[in-house]
Length: 332
Image (tube, rainbow, N blue to C red):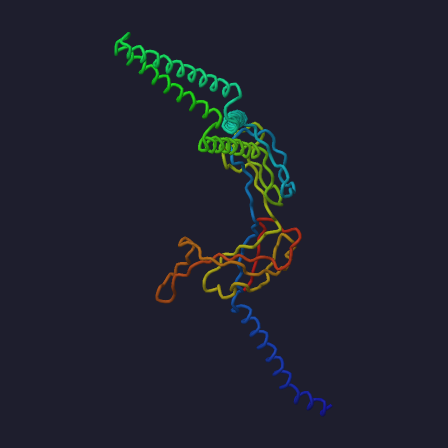
């Protein structure tokens, strides 16, 4: 009994020391929990590439063929426009093209056979008149030498003969013009006018084709801004698309934390909307934000104003179920 009592007395300091050690360790752990630095948590959101589907020409919406949430592919018909003004302009352009083509063909072909024959007849008539005038002059000249007619009559006959010769020459030139047709410059001008008219038709047809608007990209319809019967101004987005395959996270990072987000650096993030799923992101773009996003120091002797940077990071692997607007949480 005395030996057991002695053994207990000898172990008591060890037990007390152990208890004290446990108490000190527990207190140290509680102090560490109380004063350890809180992890920095950054919150961002998911964004995606957006496309606006609009028309180059104004008009009234004829039909919208898509609805919100619908998946469309590049080239699918999205909406159509009704534009009577364009139809009228197309009719005018086609009429102008037909007229220009007719003038060009006329210039290429030259005068018609009837016009050539008429010009030839005019030349033959002038030639016969010139021959007659020449013979008349010879007769009057002979009579003048015999003293039968005065000098005045001979001069009048001479003038009539010369005028007839000039008329013959003019008729000959008109006949040659009819044979040769239009000048080469006139033909070139007519051809170019025909090309210009064809270009006008092609321009209006291009605008007409733009009354049937196709999707420029694969995506999901996020908004339908105009409905059938409403007027669509030129370039106004009627439908907007989201390409969820081209999505990224946007974070606003203070510059003293920017070292964690170097270009090309990868980091982990959580998306609460997907069951707090952990995803891997890679920094793809870093840009400084405006002065409105500057963190102001309360005491410039102990700190400085820090700018805020916008960081874009894209998923390393595709993330099923990812939607625009989902929150992204990052702990540093």
